[in-house]
Length: 173
Image (cartoon, rainbow, N blue to C red):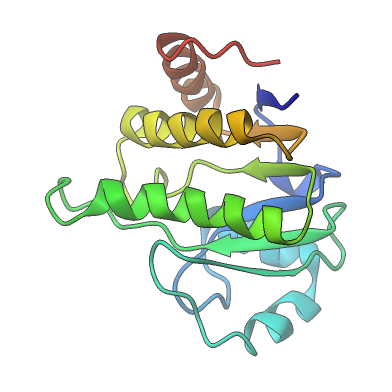
């Protein structure tokens, strides 16, 4: 059985099989959670990322976790919010689904997600949480993963995630 969790903490401190990096398309580091993950993982992460040739929006690539307690980092590029009319919902859904596909391909049991695109990329938090939790519920029903963890960056974001989870009938562990 898969558990879905929502916890407000520093994603770089989680000892899971993989944490997800809300990356930019270069995969070479940036601000927000991307910069925090790169700093915590150490310089070997950016060196490995430099060999990957970037990543298109809605896709994902996996690396080692290096100095992180997580064994791997799954880097995904979410869409920048432009009002919702430029395919942003489909691209965000694709980012989550691709992360789950990568996790399954590598036989991972636990994965932790930040609020992809809901920071500097401006995606409305409730809309982003709805996509994230809907995809997670579908993936949990497929089995395989033991833990799916959402790590919103503030108490306000955590409340949004919990409210959306409740609206979907998800009771986080």
